[in-house]
Image 1 (cartoon, rainbow over the protein chains, first blue to last red):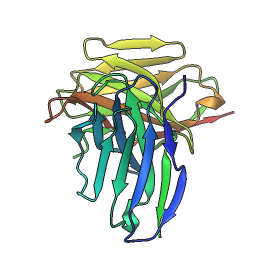
Image 2: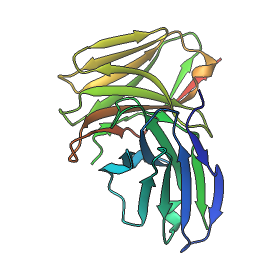
Image 3: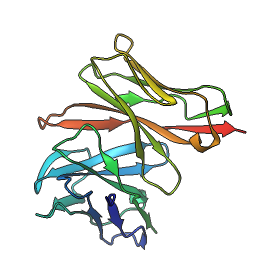
Image 4: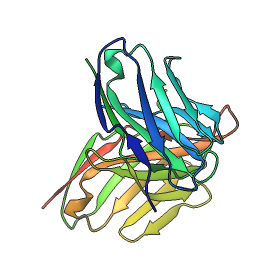
Amino acid sequence: KAGVTQTPRYLIKTRGQQVTLSCSPISGHRSVSWYQQTPGQGLQFLFEYFSETQRNKGNFPGRFSGRQFSNSRSEMNVSTLELGDSALYLCASSPRASGNTIYFGEGSWLTVV
Amino acid sequence: DQQVKQNSPSLSVQEGRISILNCDYTNSMFDYFLWYKKYPAEGPTFLISISSIKDKNEDGRFTVFLNKSAKHLSLHIVPSQPGDSAVYFCAASAISNFGNEKLTFGTGTRLTIIP
């Protein structure tokens, strides 16, 4: 069974640009959540989607948005990038809504210059 | 407000000895706890979990202990092996304001096993 797949793995963007990251969950998983990891800050929850509906949201500005498609694939978008947005963005999937145990992809490394 | 705290950013343990990673939480509504392990350039992988109705859960070399009165959990790895060198995150689950369960992660502890 394939794991959670995230694309792209690495990318560099310029301040002010926008970026879209993609996530394909484990087959059969309908819940997708997104996390940001920065040094010393652990894993900060961004948002969670289940059946194309956002069910949980973390404390991030409105520049961070996401969506989920009917096939459970998800995208997150960050607009007007700032230097502080440089981080590892992790997607995780779970078989049920707000699942207790989530399974992570390898992440997308975003560098903003 | 850091509801899940891992106060030790790093820990070094000799190979073959016991590694003990600690985690404290403040939210009494947390009802499920997990440990994840993360290697560099990889996503975290699920290790072991425990429900709040238990005080111990064991899986091979890994044992998680939960002390609800102290709002403290710990992960014991015995014996420690070089492949255990990684960053360990504890996480806790509770019903969010949106009415669904949400995981809150600690900041991680980097474990180094010394051969």
